[in-house]
Amino acid sequence: MTSATIKLFLPHGDARRLRVGEVSNWTGKALAAPRTELDDLLARDELESSGVYFLLGVNPDTGENLAYIGEAEVIRDRLKQHKGKDFWNSVVVFVSKDENLTKAHVRFLENRLLQEARAAARYALENANTSNPRLPESDREDMEVYLARIRQVLPVLGSDLLSPISGSSKPAHPQPQLFCKIKNAEATGRRTEGGFVVFAESKAVFAVRPSAEAQYPNTIALRQRLIQDQALVERDGLYVFTKDVEFSSPSAAAAVIHGGSANGLIAWKDKSGKSLKELEET
Image (cartoon, rainbow, N blue to C red; front, side, top):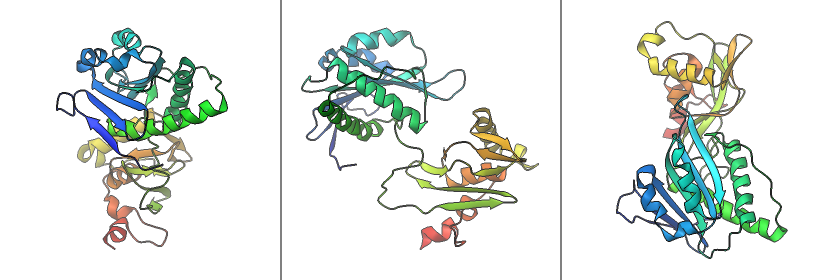
């Protein structure tokens, strides 16, 4: 990903309210707002344009992150139609300053954004299916450049919807692959920009420690949520991770694998046996 200078303008001087984001030498523009600022957002001239948008929130039934990704020739009119959706509490809009985004362009972007959001798997998607519009080759390349800028700007505006759980593919300081072993369970993972990822096919002990339910209810609740989401499934007397799962810290990851409290700085080790604590101290 190329370097970028991102300008963030706060019309009200408050980063929690309406924000406007621009990238140097890019014809696109991003606008983000909480639902409470929707009327201010709708009043802006940029929303007369065509573009793509994200509605971000939480599924009230499951508690998991939920998103809706859409496109429209007139963003203002489409967002008004979404007032009846209960789940979302923030919105991000991407438009073009030169007004060169056509209906075919934004449909192409919507399709690609849905693909990337599904691959990142951080949010459930309320609209998972869309058409696959055809564009001339040169237009497709232009839209891939536009998409790359969306990937850069979206996290700055507060959403990791498109960010891979496994972390950046080209981090400035590559993190070593680490192992966490207990009894006959072994897991692999590494630090990421968002915390710590445990990779798919890693294994966790099946039974939790007798003391865990009373002393570490958060660990038990997290394991249960992963089991309910089928991110952990039983196989041959162990739990197996069916996909990459990001945790807030190495200790949170190790605790789920151990079935009770664990010091992640000690539990995670590289292939030579050095603990994460030793690696980071040196």
